[in-house]
Image (cartoon, rainbow, N blue to C red; front, top):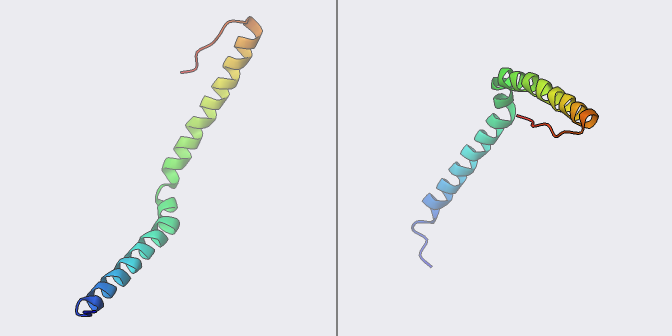
Amino acid sequence: MDGKAVSPLIGFILLMAIVMGLIGILQSTSLPQWNKAVEAKHLSSLKYEVADISRLISISASTGSPAKVV
């Protein structure tokens, strides 16, 4: 077996593993902090949408006519 290109290949694989590990650590630690404001805004709008669904269900149940959720 010819072992001429084995060392650079192993080095490349180890380098890619280190880079992928660093990207994973960055995504699990820093990304949630960067997106905190966006997630808070989304949660706020989601609360109103869920409340609207509850209101439409109550109206639909009391009147018997279907309501469309937009």
